[in-house]
Length: 580
Image 1 (tube, rainbow, N blue to C red):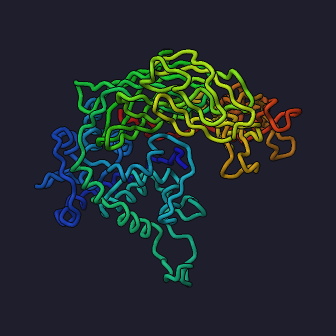
Image 2 (image 1 turned 90 degrees about the horizontal axis):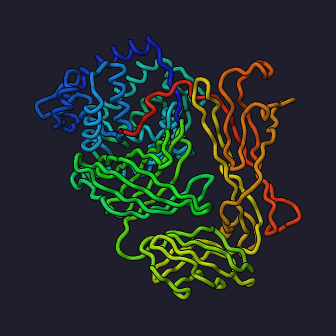
Image 3 (image 1 turned 90 degrees about the vertical axis):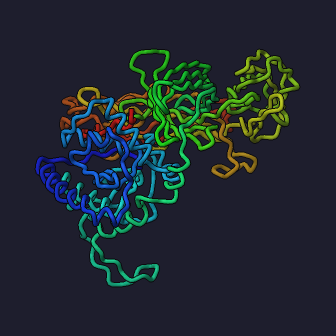
């Protein structure tokens, strides 16, 4: 899971860490070590000036520690912040940004190395399993996501020094009950029999096994980085882009992004974004500034036209051909509010992005549908627009280059299933579905989490949404041909998730609004609750849909999801990973 977990820090650990750092840093500077692991020369005068007092350069321009590591912008930023906070490096913000840019560009990750772990920089909370080596995964992911590890490439000696740093800064790391008590030490019984694969037992120290795996799997020099560092160019992204996105609780969005190159700084851009929430018609305008690291990693900050403290972060992956970007824009105290986005460069031809409705019911007339796109025909005729078998365009209401409004009729006998939308020779595959009835209801996410706050710590909100489903042509639920009918308006409520006798969580955890947004209660002990407890607990989030389109129209459809309301993150180390 890509969560952010606190780590312990003590004065003893800090002193021990400095001692270990001093001892191991000296070994990193020896000529023998440099010869054994060819490092990456540092050619930045600023890096040498600001970092050179501790990180010595050799005759090939390689700096101790620094030259033997590659990392994402987020991990380099964490290192720079640690140098400032713990080692008292004197850096003004401008120099820190320049150093970060140099290191990410010259000692970053190749696109192929970063692609599997983009979710970490995008601040997604997902289930993620590292299957290449379970012991290594268990050891590292007990305190942070394993993507943090995969965001690095190091020499063998540097992986050794990283373990030494953990032991110095966090002295309990060898004894903490990580995934069954393993920690950094060996507490599991010695194996005497071969494993299930027939191999002889491996009774090495857990950290010896992890270091061996990391050294072989995540080395400093890889074919991917060698190829990318030679081919990398400053991205040419100025121009107009079409945006398709999805925001939890609101549904699909469609619009455009105008990207302008900033002449004052390389790889720097400004943007103006305009999009429409398809389901509601809400129009949003945003402006942002962004910097691209390593030729493909877009990191930006933007604000909406509503003003106030509405700051959004932008993390996107720029494809190598500069025709597509994709990622996540997010905000909130815990980055919990976000939009999944995909940007496609607009050329001179027409493009269909999507429609205002996710589904059309058979036997309806005069259904209003808006078709979103770019460079759409100025004066389309009904015959120029197609929605597939059984769906007829009865009238073109209005037309603009970015939106065409039409009225449609769906025949009673129209076959159910996905429909392509075509306009003037261009097509959007499976833009919507045709259905005959609503068979089911789902609440997403099925398991949500919120954090109390507001007094001392920030609150973490949780957005829920209700999705209607049709069983599809086979008439059976939960099969491959089920149809997603999109978001539906429901009645939201909370119910007790009974775990103990006299469970009273529902009275204290928080409130759920009419749009499915849960806002937790305040942090801190609550004297009104028995035992002076905090306002945490488990509840059910319930959605109820009363619809004549439902299979059993005489009673509402119901669905529910579990919500855990827990404590804040009391310690959050180096949380700002924007690189800005």
